[in-house]
Length: 151
Image (cartoon, rainbow, N blue to C red; front, side, top):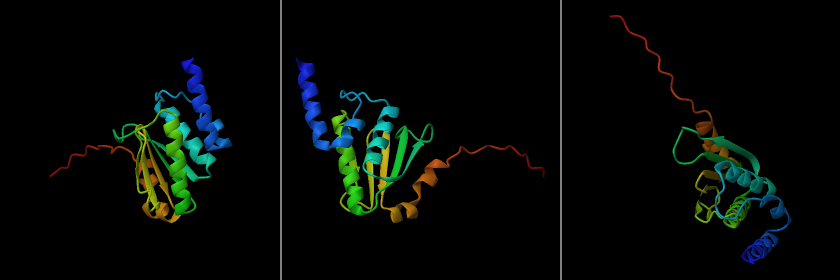
């Protein structure tokens, strides 16, 4: 009986998100998404809402902040704000309730902390200016070279 109630509740929530939501919302609702599933959900959501230049960066050992960083652009401040709203709504429907959002009022650069994945949404000019994917994507550990200097 409880399972039926949960299904009906989820069906009603999916219907409010529109047709594209049913293809995207395919994960469990108990909040146990793996980092890879969470990244995939975020990429699918951004793609469904026409985000541009979606880039995913695996952070691995670069930082303990998150496992992945997803960077995307909206066409305008209004588009960036709408991308943020829809993404947070979809994350909530998939059990990710503790989502922190910064910068949505101006919507030039919105940072979303979804736990294992950090999302940056930009207007195109702001993204080009800060170019954070270059900073995080081209990170390589320093190679230590031992050269002994002779005096």
